[in-house]
Length: 526
Image (cartoon, rainbow, N blue to C red; front, side, top):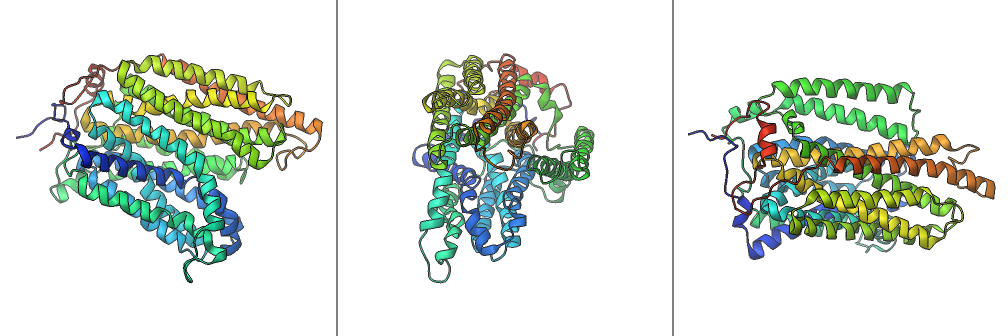
């Protein structure tokens, strides 16, 4: 007998307790840590990698291939996990990431490294989509915000230690016969993933339940294959690649923003995304049900996730330039001064999640966090050549605490949706967050470079006049970041406190039900 997916279900995560639950949580955090770390640890090893593999002209592709592949996978696997379950997708993604790490470490040419980094990115994209989703499966709505704050902690720690760990492994990684020699210690920035990742795979294999999530489809051979939204997946993947390439090439000044290459790719992506909306309206199992965006809470959370990453990338990239180019501190000191920003993000995440779980007032916590973020970024825009380091650190701490509070937001989106759409909803939030990171780099970078004259976009200033001009250009970039924070503050007022049930039945808010019934219900579970 068919059952509609909107019926209540016993919460799957309630079956996990004690050592099994702890093992799964540790495995999820280890997987997330490796995937986040891989975005920061490789940068400091790149000079040694280029010295051995050469290919300076393909330098940026080592990062770009990883980002493109991960972004492409996030929305696709989110929907597939709703249809067919999460465990084997998550295990497959983590395993793929580890295989990519092994091959990347063994690369003999730059082209091989780029291909294997893309393989890593495919696995990482699966993890990015599913780790937060699995946490939503494991815990009832009233506990999700508390556990969701772990993501902010993990990301903060990876940003804090990633560059330093990458440099240390490149210089001091252990030698292994002919596999890792003095000049190839950089391979450890990839091999380090293997022992940690295998622990995560083992824990997920043995302790993560097969029937963790509410499935919208049961596997029945070719019938199940036909229900997969292949056309939507293909259009989404190509549109994402075109958009990300266009933004990356423009922001890195590989091509001018008005060049045929950049404008052509962005134009193609816009056309494809428009086509994507028409395809999804007609798909039997769309990878991104457009009805999700009828839900006000979900729409605001996705917008805030995007703005959060725009702010973080704008600050992370251009504050070190201000410290070195305007305040004339050394690169090492600049790294130390930036440390409080990462620590304060962790602190913001640690405070926000438990407060939301305790008070059941997500909206007011988000408003306060956004207000603190606006205050910190406003003070950063006022920094000049005379600002002392202590004040700069205080301003960064305020911005970091405010931005870190937003890491609980994906759990708010989860609570606004039925359990049967947990995967696709979480994946959409993660996808737009990653897109926000690229948009932040593109917008702030364009503002800063457009404000620089006299060759300062190629070097740090040396004279007082150049420092003043450099400071002015960076302030324009910080004003762009401030605008992002103001938009975020306004958006928090449109959030709603989702009523949270303490029962083990599926928590579906009245708002979610209203949104879902604005379009025909999707395919029932057989």
